[in-house]
Image 1 (cartoon, protein in one colour):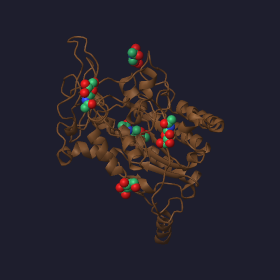
Image 2 (cartoon, rainbow, N blue to C red):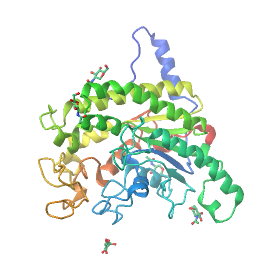
Image 3 (tube, rainbow, N blue to C red):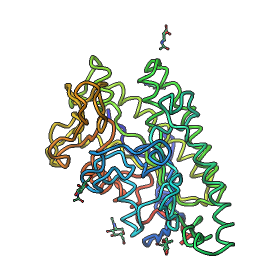
Image 4 (tube, rainbow, N blue to C red):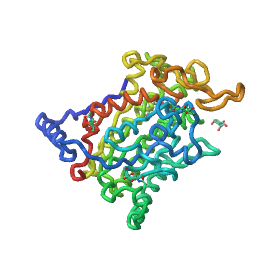
Length: 387
Ligand SMILES: *[C@@H]1O[C@H](CO)[C@@H](O)[C@H](O)[C@H]1NC(C)=O
Ligand SMILES: *[C@@H]1O[C@H](CO)[C@@H](O)[C@H](O)[C@H]1NC(C)=O
Ligand SMILES: *[C@@H]1O[C@H](CO)[C@@H](O)[C@H](O)[C@H]1NC(C)=O
Ligand SMILES: *[C@@H]1O[C@H](CO)[C@@H](O)[C@H](O)[C@H]1NC(C)=O
Ligand SMILES: *[C@@H]1O[C@H](CO)[C@@H](O)[C@H](O)[C@H]1NC(C)=O
């Protein structure tokens, strides 16, 4: 069963108190009634929201990454723009510069701390020898802390560098976005950990996630837009790695999606608690799972075909295998693993990440407020006192 956003009232609550709850929720003073004017975006996350962090640290993915939009990967794990790019565009902001990129970055309107393969939890096996990013969420938070301090020094000094950093008041007025957690799950699945063991780590992963959000709040952040995790069991990397796993009616591996849903349930609960712990913050839980899953349920409706196959890959049932990933040169034929003919007719780009076409549809859906808790459009998710 898909986890759907819903409020459940305890059975002992009277009708009157239910009405009070509803009144209180809908007239909550936290959210502004007019559009927010976020001057900056600070993002924390993994590859789904990386705009060049991993590329700066370990080199960019090669073409055909970026082929649809940038004509180079631009440090993104897609054929084009990612959801964070659409969020920035929505507010008329430039694409968010990666914090790690020392060349050509302009942080006036925000910074992106996300990197490919980042986890919430501290990783035990990191690149370049291991598989996970050294820039886990706690490291990204530390980077942000010193980013605030150092931009103050630079502003005080004046000169050209001061035109590259945010104004002081932008930190409290900015939108803080998060997209992380998927790698905490997949690292376990693809490592030597049973599904039940991975599932059992989730409460701890969510606790750490919340701890880091609190740290960012304590540094002055007030408006939070927090993505949950997608249907991991629909991704070619999982389908190809666990071919005998039981499938749902759409061909997705059921149990892996159930683990995603459990993560999402715990995250949603923890954010509801955080909302009462931090009354000055506007905390929005964003269900990306449902709009992503609906692409796999109804591909034709959205103009997609071969929903479970990677567009850029090297063969096999799901066009994903370990003999060569998208953009890599295969050892056998010495050819670069390339794109399908029309990435805009595909959901999954490289077996792990979504195409620009899919990202745009998911953005359009989450930005309306139909998939968020509380159900408020992206344009109105600011903290009242900060606008
Ligand atoms: C895309 O980049 C290639 C080089 O990688 C170049 O030959 C081509 O002209 C570029 N296309 C566009 C539309 O800019
Ligand atoms: C950085 O971006 C800001 C806002 O777009 C702009 O005013 C500033 O001139 C830019 N700095 C440089 C050095 O280009
Ligand atoms: C995986 O776990 C099994 C059983 O716990 C163990 O025997 C095996 O050595 C482990 N393999 C790796 C690669 O860690
Ligand atoms: C994950 O753990 C929760 C809590 O114990 C349980 O309800 C759920 O069924 C588990 N999911 C899987 C796939 O094991
Ligand atoms: C949000 O605001 C932007 C910029 O003003 C606008 O282009 C967009 O249509 C708005 N989105 C919604 C869903 O109202």
